[in-house]
Length: 260
Image 1 (tube, helix red, strand yellow):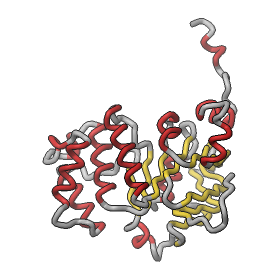
Image 2: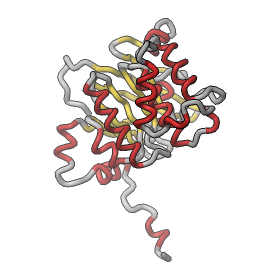
Image 3: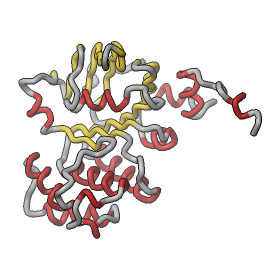
């Protein structure tokens, strides 16, 4: 786990978090600290609990037990709206208003966050052009492709100027060029002091983009790799090999392809 000094400021702190569905545990006594101003990556196989974790952190799901602190404040019913005004999220699949146009959706969300202003239109058009969705500015959200919907959600989240940005599988269904541009924007956000929390199964992207990485498997954090520990481990192994060692999959099942 982390070897960080006690005075490190955390954008996110989770202690003993639990979540079950119909008696089946999804997250078990989960503990995690995410330093402020970093790009943090959470990786794990399908079904590890990544999306459930994001749902709990963003208040979309109710936890069974445990504590969540965001920017040093405990997330409770009393301050949930106040804290949510400082965070933004792009979920998988994105939560969008189907009957709004892309422009209507973005401006509506920005107004809710109080980030609308005289230069908002210029910012929207600039981002939409950068991500090649400007032709859908006045098209209904329900008519957009999966990739365009993801890019719309990403652009909107950025425009709310969050202190903490949650991205759940942000590169899913997105073209290669746009993935590169999303990575550029994510790094710019970090430079401005935003903390970015990413879940992804694209290990190569996480490896090159994130400062710290945690491995989630069967509802538990198996490892927390900060920059120093990653550097030591990756002298001999890439992230994919490290990941496979931690979740202990190795070559299991390859004998099923002996006929190939």
